Image (cartoon, rainbow, N blue to C red; front, side, top):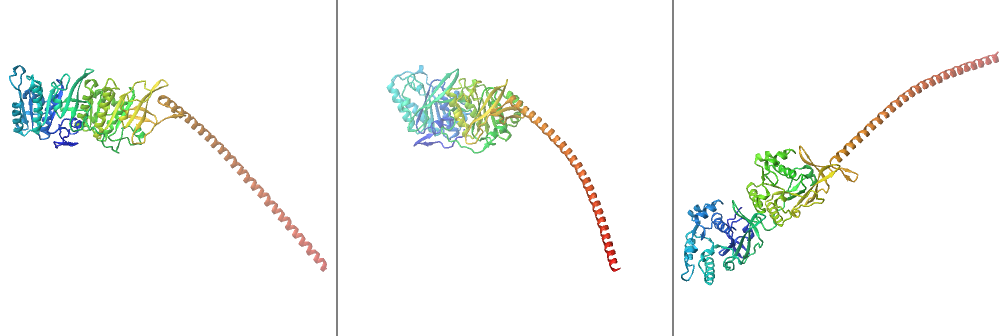
Length: 574
């Protein structure tokens, strides 16, 4: 968690000291009241000492505020060993004058009430520890130990008030732990009234799973989260949920990223989903949810981005093996350090622990894409309110970090309408529904986009198929007003191909016949043309002959006429 070097926040006029505890500063809108006392109450094993110790140590390490930890039930050596598991070296902090550990041994059997009781000795001892290092933070763990031998409750109440007033006058931000009472928050029932802030810790076991919860009972002069928040004690300290901002103020990107499935990208305008958005894939077993998740992270790694796949049904080796059957080689991305596959049984932890594990891995690995397959396995009761709240926190966390997330959700085998089973579809930006369609003795897969906010998308149902080259979608195949899938589509395609082939053959035959007829006709035309030419030649010959004969006859007639004219003229002269 990235921590600010500013040690005091101002919210609604109240100075606040950040605790440095993941999630607690978000719930309290900045931290604990600065210069005042906070009571942390709870039964044994709830984490009171751990929270108080982390408050002091985070202040010394992350915010430059020295602290005093005065304990009455645990020795300094025991506390040092316990906090070493979180990476804190208490001995080094003491040498650097950033921390004072003071163990005050109080044994109830050794106490004997002989006179008026007061805390003047504690004030002197605690004041010396504060002044020796200029402490800004103080922890008293636990307050009840101071009053084990006090029977006069009037004195007890007076001294408690004086203790809280003394701490406030010293100007330190104090945390006082207290044991949970039977009918009150503490054993004596007074600390919660005197403290300016009261935090109640609780531990419950539901379905054999232990869950710690935190609630800010009161916070004078400041707004704060009033709900119960699960928290966990892990390798990095305490994590309180929500572990992200309580406001819905994450940015919205206009960049689009491919799903790794070309047909699905085509249904989304050819560009894919918005970066930083949340995608829900719902479907019955065997519809291809895990394959879509694998394709999603494979596409991210192919772009050179980091991705995390949380698998709650298969081991890493099983995921890698199964995806090779559809042409997805995820092992290469694992080898290159671009892909992390986290396989965990859902029953191993509670919901909150799973969320914290996801949070820590994301903060460590910094992926661009996260796929969780499936989210419905995180709870035995898929409709439980706890799962919905956990997923809401997870969605907000990933969106705040700009991470594109895919969540798969298991539905029942006989589901006839789209459902998310875990009731989080309204939180998602896009929702895909996979379905099994049984027809003609076979089962085929279909996919449809139920919603995709902020973008145009197809409303058609597509057939979802596997191949050696991955997964893809087949265009809608219509036969009249009926959508055909699977072997029905293939049979109809073969029938159409056969019909087309017969039609093409018939066309070729008819064209050949036409060509033959045209050739015969051309031959006939050629013969007729030859005959016409012959007739034309004969006619011309006859005409020429007739013209020659006519010209000869005319010539003879002219000669005879000339001869008769000449004879007649001769007779007249004679």
